[in-house]
Amino acid sequence: MRKLVIEKAAVRANMAVVRKRAAGAALYGVLTGDGGGAGLVPLARMLRDEGGGRFAVGSVEEAQELREAGFVDEEILMLRATVDREELERLVDLNVVCTISSVDTGLALNAVAENRSTVAEAHIQVDTGMGFGGFLVDEPEKILLAYRSLPNVALSGIYTQLHTSPKGSEQEVSAQLKQFHQVLDAIHAAGFETGLVHAAGSYALMHFDAARLDAVRAGSVLLGRCRRTQGDGLTVVGYGEAPLAEVRWLPKGHTVGSDKLVTLKKPTRVAVLPVGYQNGFGVERPRASGFWALWRWWRQSRQRTVRIGNQRARIIGSIGATETILNVTDVKCSAGDVATFDLDPLYARGVHIEYR
Image 1 (cartoon, one colour):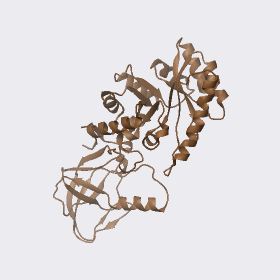
Image 2 (cartoon, helix red, strand yellow):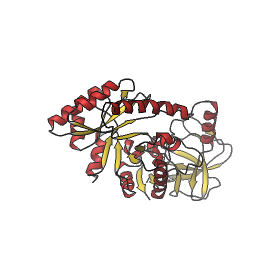
Image 3 (cartoon, rainbow, N blue to C red):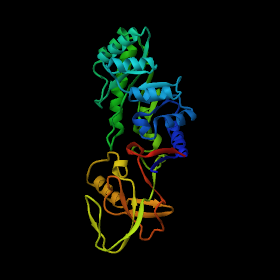
Image 4 (cartoon, rainbow, N blue to C red):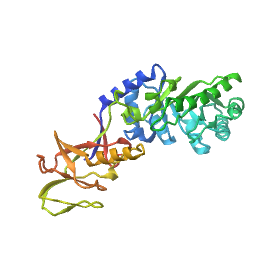
């Protein structure tokens, strides 16, 4: 069986790093994308066991799955605004904290809550430059409308998402935070309370102290899969396991591969690993641009290996769709032996998730 293994000890260690960096700020465990590929419910349970009581999701389905799994009293924040009436009705019924990113999304949520004879809870989203959604920083009068004109909505927080380039500077983040604080000042000047204020996602949390406000949002950092710096204390979480499907000798001159054929220069003992890029093997997150970044990626891809016991086997040719060929000429192994390899949970497909 092909598996994605999630090491509990590594997640706990990363949680400890995150809590230290949060420095007392409230912590949202971001579970978008099925918990970053690690499994929505099992990751949420781990976070709850470690004292986490706030979660953030990206869809109604994720919120419903959490509620049905027994997360009844925990706060769930929906990190996406919507005007879809059916979605809003489900969010309100599930007691999810919604996001208001515009006058329209605020009015839509208020109408649903009024029709349900209830008060919906929501956070305001402010766009400080990412462009994915939120009130613009130069239109505070529209934000104030949300505080004044939505009687069936209780505004309990406000947040932004900070954009950070691979070479993101303190000045870049400071400029966005300055804009965000100007919005907060305008709200306070009008006599309203902002509630919980948050701006830092995984990257900003680990790199910019000024981004830690009332709360932080931790997602990819929990799996050690965010943009890293040396000595940050994080551990990469997630690896793949699969039994070797076949081991045999191929003669000199035989070709191996599909899109990139390799001609064997000598008799070679090969093993078939029943995992390919369709399972997420070898698939990587977006990387920095530029010649040297490309060169590092090329070099790493050529050096990619698979572990069989305490031995390493090199990949021959390119990773296939569902299978990959390994050079095991000098590796003691046979069909059925388990091979382990790096597998980013975010891209893992067709594998069984196992927490250990």
